[in-house]
Amino acid sequence: MQSLLHGSGAVDGGLTRIALWVLLPILLNIAIGFVFERLRPIDPRTLSQTSIYVLSPCLVFHSLLTTKLTARDIASIAAFVYVLTAAQWLVAKGWAKARRMSPGDEAAFILSTVFMNAGNYGIPLCLYAFGSAGMERAVVWVLVQNAGIGSLAVYYAARESVGVLQAVKTIFTMPAVYAAALAGLLRLWHVSPPAYVMAPMQSLGLAMVPMAQLLLGAQLARSAKYIKADAGRIAEATALRLVGSPFIGMAIAAGMGLTGLGAHVMVTLSSMPTAVNASILAIEFGAQPRFVSGVVFCSTVASFVTLTVLLRALG
Image 1 (cartoon, helix red, strand yellow):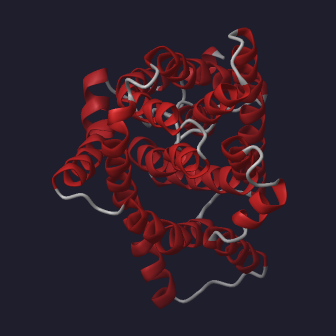
Image 2: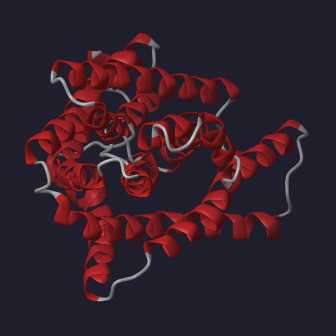
């Protein structure tokens, strides 16, 4: 596992340099979204729909068509995501049983500890820390997470409200899934779209990075009031997400024989704070939204410290 902490040099530098050049740009964009929401409340749903239905498919389409990742690289990322999710679920489930949580408390706890914000936080972070090669891996991670793990998140948010079939149907309403399929077919057929198609795909895709950060800031502004809902459990969930998950990620990366940039990106994405989507699902299905939103807020704020330390270690 020690070998994971050396190799790519993508984030070389001291803690101050990492904080200033990698995390501060993200923090400032999130802060702008936070302040804007407080001063002039907006509808995050509009930003979210723009990101999901316009910007995200463009990013996926362009990234998958231009990526230098091989099929083996993509399969490795997918395997990592599934193994990590299973391991985190076992840890969270075991912790909930040890704490004798009720079924409702357990569902909310798992929802807030297993599902990380690899999209509107992880993609920008990997871009700033590791460059375009890091962002490409993050995009694949998010695709796998949304397509394969999304139904599990819906299950824990809804329990009896919706079934697995409905969760699967929801996945196939996401344009990014079709963008990925189309890009895959074009690569298989060795067809390259003309520049006048790829140029807008690239510009719109890159627009997702700041848009996602503004959306995260707006969502945090709405969830800040919930941090006192259950301070003890929120602290437990935050610690498990930000401290426990990186070690799980390192162990899995070592077990899979990953090294260098690939290992660094996987471990970094493992260490992301709780996904904003967890809060959205909790609100929609009544799965203790105050608790889950509190974890989203606290884990995101605390992650600026934990991720700075992690990136320094990886450097």
